[in-house]
Image 1 (cartoon, rainbow, N blue to C red):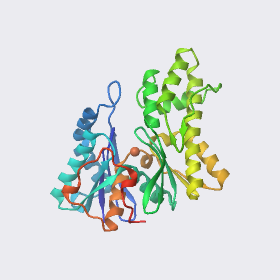
Image 2: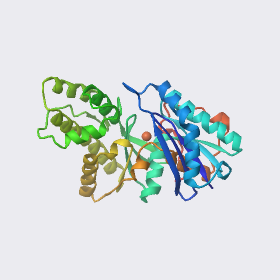
Image 3: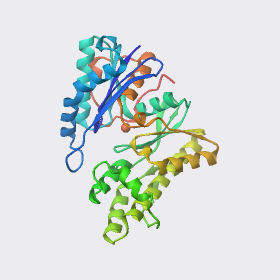
Image 4: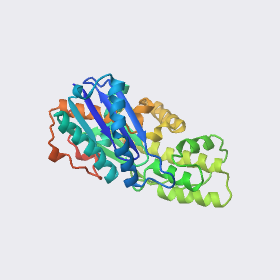
Length: 326
Ligand code: FE2
């Protein structure tokens, strides 16, 4: 069975094609880059509508097949930005109706977990999902993917991007912050906001900006920022692993490209006698292959959807989905 998946929850439109064993046959994407400021949802959605035909063509070329070879169309049903979700869903519905194949709406966060599991060969991990819009610690327990910890306000990547813009580091500023952090020497005082199993990032940005206006070195601010918020993530991930007794930690989301974060999680895992798994970069970021694979897994488990079931859900929670395929 060949599944085509369309990802469109936020800044990226992605199209992926996978087979029934989870082999990625195509995975192409195009990221919306706002001329200035943050993402305007409507403008990102316009971008997605514009690039969709080109990406579909590119995906078929990469997979060496055509529309007639597709047996199932899946798409990111949520969570995400309304206009972006609706655009991706519209592309998926048109395609499924035109090709006369079934359609499947997929939870975006679960898709990160499923593609990470199949591509790295881990069995039953705790996922640390750290991206622009989402920051969650997720694991399978009692028939659902449960959220064991999450951000109470903004995603960690969103905080990096907002701070980067204020400091003149450009838009997707995670890599610029990582580079500066590598030259940091002094650990500055920033709020360490772990609340129960959850984390909070919005106050940290305000505190980092205050340090900047006090004349602290940018390198030290970025260094302290990384040390602080990655420690917070490592702490809640470790507690989730200890609580449910899991010995694998899987990374997902754009922020896990950061080498310092990986090293910290790796050290935590090693100290516990656990193992860390990291998918290749193009499967860590938002991508169509993860949506295709999750759609395929759901279909194989017997789940079916009509067009009337494909309404998007901006606040689609990870733990809303019955995981009948595990
Ligand atoms: Fe994501």
